[in-house]
Length: 128
Length: 140
Image (cartoon, rainbow over all chains, first blue to last red; front, top):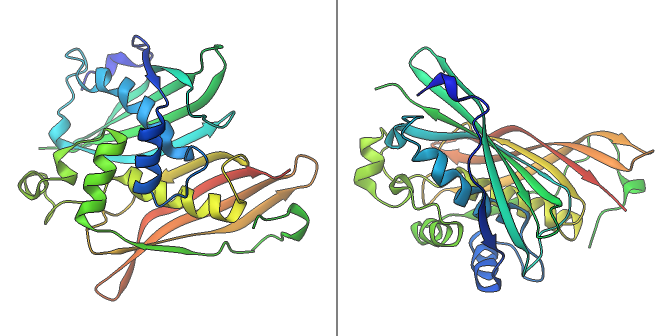
């Protein structure tokens, strides 16, 4: 991985909080219906992360990637019908021994421009 | 059912929440989340990555932990932060047990800090799928 990419920002990606998707997600995580499960934040986050993972400048080998840490900071609950935009940015790229560590921070904002949730995803690219 | 700040003390434990994962659960999570990494769906891909077979998404394990918290809280509104360090893989057929313990209480902000975790029992040993996770909740 390219260690020079700390701070790189990617174009925002738009994701609508669709009721059928929320129901399927709630079912998948064993959550009851009536609200959007907090970790539904992963849906817009992943939509944004796809660009980072595929970035030729980063040169990440996704077949050797494991997810080693995730955090969310919720500023307001997610709601069905929200039109969210996810803005990913690389926080850090580091190498320790033969393992590379990539941390991506994704700010997820609503149509009013308010930050709804911030995701922080750390991936490890294991040595060959 | 929801918890009240006044009823909590440092050291209190959350009601644990258990769930046995099937392969279908992994497929359902992949579809719902959009994470179709073959590591979670295809045994051959998982073996190529050094695992004996498909493993659950870390985010499915974290989703189960969040469900444990929302059951305790009575909804999602109070949850402010959740950090999940993924420390062991989880295989289909295994039972996740999510839990947590109150670590600190701040009466001025009504915030509660918790240590949270998810364990699985494997060959008579308890593995920590999420180890030393942290949550912050703010009660009304």
